Image (cartoon, rainbow, N blue to C red; front, side):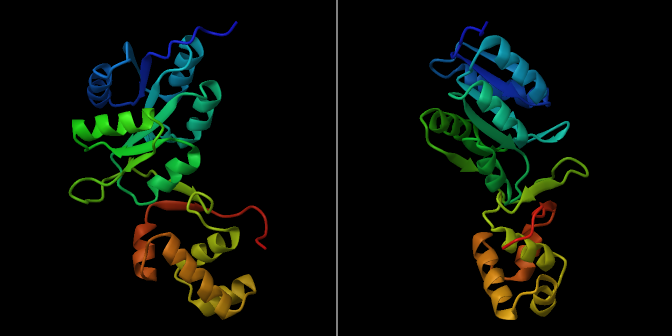
Length: 226
């Protein structure tokens, strides 16, 4: 028997009680939200959805106790396809928006945002518009949980399989000639791939690219690239 659908509630998934309470209070003031449920991990969130039906919105922390929570987005949307998912994070890493978007979430906002910004993000996501504000106001690089690595595939970053292989070697400090030899490509082709990677990842040179990719665990293709 399917649970009754109570699409007037909001669900907050965050393992920091004070942060969750603050977001819950703001959500409870929105028109159409009758109550706010709070759980500390994604598994409890899925159990809540299974029991209560689809919430209006799920606000979920990117970094939970078990690490990156984006792999739960698919599970949430499978149970509640009409639910909107807004992710929040204190991490300002430039790769987060791509990771969140690739997971199927509808928005991302930094935890240091103002209440007005949070409300604007929630309303935008509920109306069907995407929302991405992932940088702290002071542009400082916020810390992620100790030893946490942001696992990113080439697809998450908008790269082809071959570009992902090239990026991996660039991040290891390999020059174009060595990359060409390793991947059996011409230096000209490698140069074109590197140029495309820089453009896609918003970097002007290799040093900036390596800096932007710090803390990212790049997932390499499991099959040979074309």
